[in-house]
Amino acid sequence: MPVTAARVVKAVQKVSSAPAFARIAPHVVPALDRVVHRLTRGKVLLSAQLLPGVVLSVRGAKSGQLRRTPLACMPEEPKEGVGGEGAAKESGGSWLLIGSNFGRTGHPAWTANLLAHPDAEVSWKGEDIPVTARLLAGEERAAAWKALLAFWPPYATYQARVEREIRIFRIVRR
Image 1 (cartoon, helix red, strand yellow):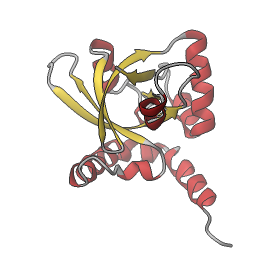
Image 2 (cartoon, one colour):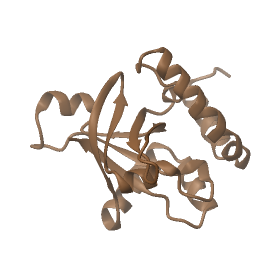
Image 3 (spheres, rainbow, N blue to C red):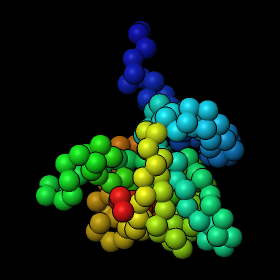
């Protein structure tokens, strides 16, 4: 039976839904991403070989120090009639960031940082882009959640593991 890209993705989705992955991945994946991102001058994120990714730079909610966090994201298509053709299309228009924390109990620290300091920056395909983040709620969050589950089904497993509502942010260029 030949190995296809679809089979590889299915296998990775299954592994990423396992509780052991939630214990190990938060310590390994971001560290590898930071090293590869730095060595390639922002052009490559290792984890983005499966899911698109950004490196979020935002001030710490308590410390005020700049924090850099590699994150999976879901690029969104630009809405008709909003913004210019060039830059918006190149960036994907906006991105969804999901605070799944690999299905662990607490919210990831970067979500508290964005709540305290919504003006941030992302590194997207080697370009540093100033952005503003907004926590989604209500119908807007429900629509984003539906799109995220179609994009990466393991998010449903992460949500089922925790009692908290996983935070979803939309980030847009400033």
